[in-house]
Length: 327
Image 1: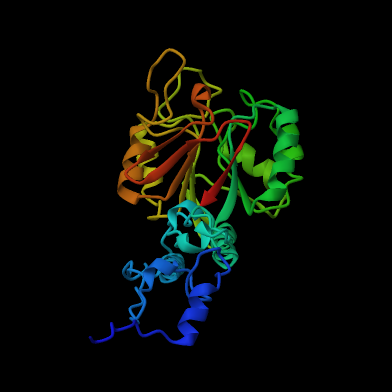
Image 2: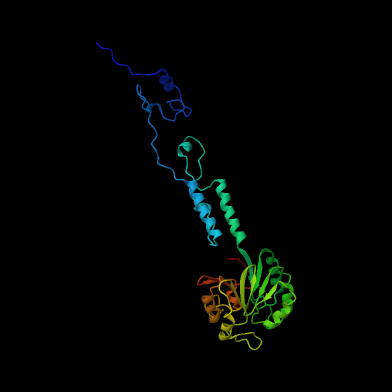
């Protein structure tokens, strides 16, 4: 009678089966597979099922950052990528199941966080900061506050009404003259062009504009002052009709910054009674010349408000002042 066949076992295989793995399973030494995976007499080790190719998340990070840098160098203003918007690192689930460290999906590697922060810093460095204000009307306390704010910007724009009904202009300009940054001003309806020019003549950093332009830090700034259209305040008010304003605005270059004491019609121009009193000539200039920024004042009830006309940011700056990024 033939003897039954015995399973072929090597001494090494038996020794390996009898040993415990570091993770507490009976199996091949150094393996995480349990002993039941291996059958006597066979060398049939079951391989882990492939999960498919992992996403190349590092390349996704680099691609996104390179795209943002390319847009920034071409002058395109795009928001800096946030950490939450970037693809997450894959989680090593097998390692985590056995007590290993788990990567948190909402946290990026330090190198990429530093790259994102550097993009944000580059944006802040490349964008000029402007302090814009209007309608201080002899309020010297507000003027002192504006002087302090000016230390944090590249240049300053004052959109008229420094005095009140032709009074107090000298005292106001004396305080504002402590601003050491380049300073563009237009007359409001409370002071005339000649009065403002006389008070600012001894300060080289002050540029008084009315139907004229100046270039500051490489940016073209065109200014027009006075009340437009004619206000009901009487003879003391420095006013212009829509036709006169249209003639003055014909010299406005395209792009850059438009500074007007009066707002455009239909934008940041609503009085406390709910009436729009803005200028149609200024509105037409914005549509035709397409400045990147329009700074105005005059209508106190809209101080500090912003809106947009055909891509132009329109700001009623107000007496407290606003720090704006350009472009």
